[in-house]
Length: 245
Image (tube, rainbow, N blue to C red):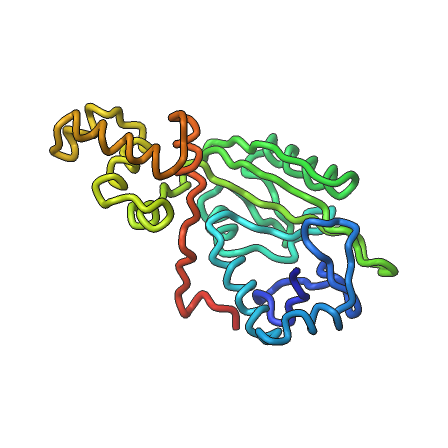
């Protein structure tokens, strides 16, 4: 359960988060709980530390995150979101979030307006700069509030998705360095013979490594293995200059 952030990333309009009395509980659109209960539940960690941790998480998230009103006026845009703007995959005009092209702009406005009206939407924005996947959900206004609902958007640039490091594969699945290196090759689309050549090992050795990879990950098919490897969580790389003020 997440409490209201009094020290959320700079520039965040916190009116979406639940007002002065209530806390919106993610995962349950209708669930609102008193701030007093929320504070009591995480008092041992300290509200400030929790809020700072949430701010760091959002600002270091590899995907773009934005909070807008139904007209696409931006309340918050994380660093990955700003990077998408610099890359030309999104635009900011007069404080409003726009698509990278007229047609993509129409699609984005439709996602935001439709999401604010009936819950959640997703779409693909295509332009000369690349492809951007967008998923959005409505954040209901707090009970008794006169504020309008806001929209939470997540943007994914498929071209910038990083495969997991071999060290992550080792710690996540207990792979040896050689097995993790082969798993990374498989994820990159190399076949077993090519991976054996790249790694300077015999084809039979590569087959043994692959069998161990399947055993340790619990995957039964290559498609399942690819999905597990892609979903392997990356460590949050936090730099001091990325911490919320």
